[in-house]
Image (cartoon, rainbow over all chains, first blue to last red):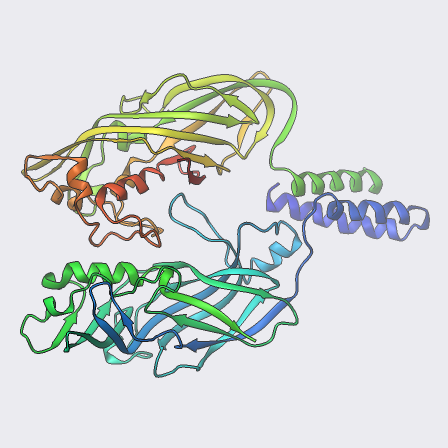
Amino acid sequence: MSSIARNIASYYWVRNMQVFMTKPHLKAVGLTIAALPFLGCSEPNEAPRVKLPVVIDGSQITPVTTNLGYDVELESVHVVVEDVVFTVAGEIHTKSFFEHISDAVIPPVFAHPGHYQGGEITGELPGIFNINWLENDGDELGTATLIEGNYSAANFTFGRGSKVQSNADLVGHTAVLTGRATKENHVVSFHITIDSPEGRELVGAPFEATINSQTKGTLGLRFSVEDPLEGDTLFDDVDFHDFDFDDDNSIIITPNREESEDVYNIIRRRFQTHDHFNVHLSE
Amino acid sequence: MTPRNTLAIVAALFLASACSDDKSEGGEGTLNITAYGEDFIELGIPADEMADGWSVNFDTFVVTIDAVNVANKSFPVSEPVDISVPTEGAGHRISSGVAPVGAHANSSFSITHVELAGSAVKDADTKTFNWTFENATNYTACETTTKVTDGGEATFQITVHADHFFYDSLVAEEPQVVFQALADADTDLDGFITKTELESTDIGSYDPGNDNTVDNLWTWLIAQSRTLGHVDGEGHCEATAAD
């Protein structure tokens, strides 16, 4: 049924229910019929919304050892993140009046073969966030609005730093990572700049939590150098010493730099996966 | 119309809209199932549709389609079809049968085999290819409504989007259509891009999203081959690997 037809039906529904309710002998019939659309399908009623603060959580940025034997320690992690949303597993049946109300707040999901993976979006934290994961650990990003449910994942869009909100290194870029990589007592400092394609979504960052009206606490948005599930790291297969072309113990990996193109692609590919981000509810 | 009658009709409309996406009435009509590769497969992908100046033409583009289900009816498909053969927009009829009158949603089908051969050209460079993908994909919950009228004739078109093979992303809403990375995989420079060459070439700047099993250009093409199926032009389906 089209939205126009639905609106017309709604209008006549309300108008005629008023007629029925003013006639005592028809009231019972009216109430019964009025309930039919709601009894006809086993769909849920509107669930309460829960508001929870979202904070920067740098607790999983710890020193790691890569598959090539480098001990890597990050010194700064700056990332531009936009419009965080929270999803429940699989498909929920919200073809109720609630769905139409929630459309105004919760963006709709549109699946394209191979281009989208994830559940139903039922929570959000809109905005553009320049996150400095280590320096601003614990700072609040904002308040998320979530519908009660069993959450399984979070999504967001990688943004680009602006002159207004970002430090100079991040302007025009998605992320800047700095740190040190050590192997056989040879230390190399690194400065990695990452550019994600415009509008690039990260889908499916783990977020296992049951949210209901009694839920208190904070949602920690985490970045992790090591994939907590598979144990591989963001810097696996990166031979840092190979890229210290001038032997000054310092390397720079940026987009559009031919000599480090391959390693840039490897790091960007890993960085843009859900393996290195998650959301944790601390109650 | 009395309020009581109006209310009954409105209640019926509410129930119908809330509970069902497949509305059948009395009677039957004929439903044709077609497979169509659009101009991109029948005529080729021109350079101005590609982001890097290559153009692509297909000599053959054979698909094996199976398990077509529309209006809760199965439509058997007897043999593979070469959708590179021009049809002037009509598509290739691959099955036909009787279907109940109504507006039918929630259709599904499978593509079990794709075999394409052709060439890509940019300036003086020509690269040829002949690739076969045996990775079956089920397409379900397709976003289209097939309307069958009593005694009438309707069409459910399975549309194959060849340009997906040349997308630079598995996750972008609007990926670029490019060929250069595939051309560069021709490491022996014989002008023929083989499966072996693709398997030994990293995906480079291509974006596989969360799928870290896609790490060479052959697995990239397999992943893209699972996104080819659409319905009635741009209608999307839920695509899942069958193998």
